[in-house]
Image (cartoon, rainbow over all chains, first blue to last red; front, top):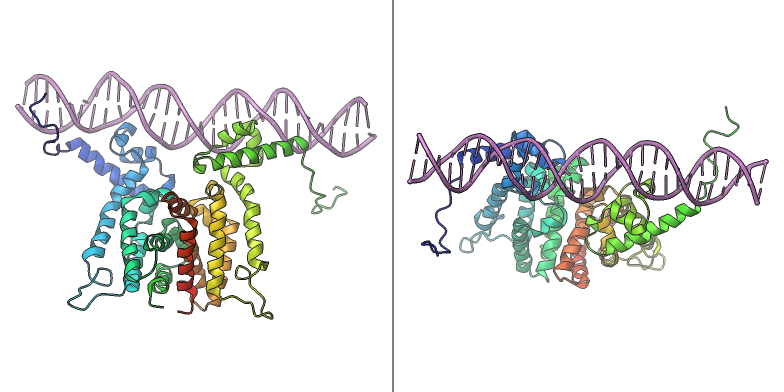
Amino acid sequence: MTTELPLADGPPPRERADAARNRAKVLAAAERLFASGDPAAVTMDDIARAAGIGRGTLYRRYPDRASIARALLDEHERALQERLLRGDPPLGPGDTAAGTVPAPAERLAAFYAAMVELLETHVHLVLGAETGEARYRTGAHAFWRLHVAHLVREAGRPDPEVLADQLLAPLAPELFRHQRERGITPERITAGLAALARGALGQG
Amino acid sequence: MTTELPLADGPPPRERADAARNRAKVLAAAERLFASGDPAAVTMDDIARAAGIGRGTLYRRYPDRASIARALLDEHERALQERLLRGDPPLGPGDTAAGTVPAPAERLAAFYAAMVELLETHVHLVLGAETGEARYRTGAHAFWRLHVAHLVREAGRPDPEVLADQLLAPLAPELFRHQRERGITPERITAGLAALARGALGQG
DNA sequence: AGGGAAGCGGACATCGTGTCCACTTCCCTT
DNA sequence: AAGGGAAGTGGACACGATGTCCGCTTCCCT
């Protein structure tokens, strides 16, 4: 028996100075590596070497490349999530009293546009994080799915859960990257998605 | 100087008996391995061992796992391509004289349904073949894109090239597998896609 | 100042890839 | 039917990435 209550974990232990220093070095190095070239080709060894630390140190905090990319991506994704929940319409929900509630199709189009912006700035991070099927299991994806399913339901369409995943599919980072490499501009991508949004959720 | 014309390559050299035997063993073993478990986790070594041949022999014919999966998948995909070009409507183009030409939205819905069927039977092969961004560079994908772009154009929608890729995205094998694992039936998936097809290409 | 713990980093074992080359099997020619 | 050259075979090898382990260092609290 101890004098401490089993479930009362104390204050979060302060991060040691050397640990903080190394974390910053890792994130800076990883950001740089992801941005220059194929994110999937960046190895843990590359990152450790670029950060000037040992492999063991790197693995202590980050179990794999995806977790590093996610750490870099999180703040951006959270900012967008915040705007979806409380930002101005048509991205945010609007105000019933003020009569500024946007149609679901418009909110979806605005969401698409915001995601294209995010991808344009950070594809390399999204591709460095989980890709393929693993992507569908991330917290971020769950959020997007919830949001889109909500819009589908508002638009009175059947089976929002299934349709939401299908409406999110065109935002796959691999597709975005492929389109950009073929010379397609973000504007054209956004326009196509807007058409899709109006077709799927508009009162056709 | 030879007596043979430089560009006149003779008849295709017959495949040797041992080579044919081994090829059959490889394909059978690979099919079995892909079907049982995660296709991405199957290694060339696994296949060689399961086929009872050496690694060198395997690499002689197939440079990587994807090429084996593609060999297994090809005939199925070609059959579908044939039906798209010359099959009965609404999958095929129909007959102007007979007045059986289906609306683009209906053809897209039929294509979606056929692809879901193909995925339901062979996801493990599609996942064993190129996945992620590499998928967009395959001949098969080029064919689907051409087909869908044609339908988009027929429906009078702008930017068929971009919209075609976006309409193909919900057929990503990773998404299909994820949905199936969550207990969503092929019927629900097909229904969702049909709604999408009518929304995007219908005369809304 | 000192000591215990958190953090560090390089060495190591493991696994998958792809290549290479000495040997075997096939099948065409005579 | 036999012989010979080429196509095919398969195991050994080198390489690169992963993830773990543990003796040493650095930190920070007392």
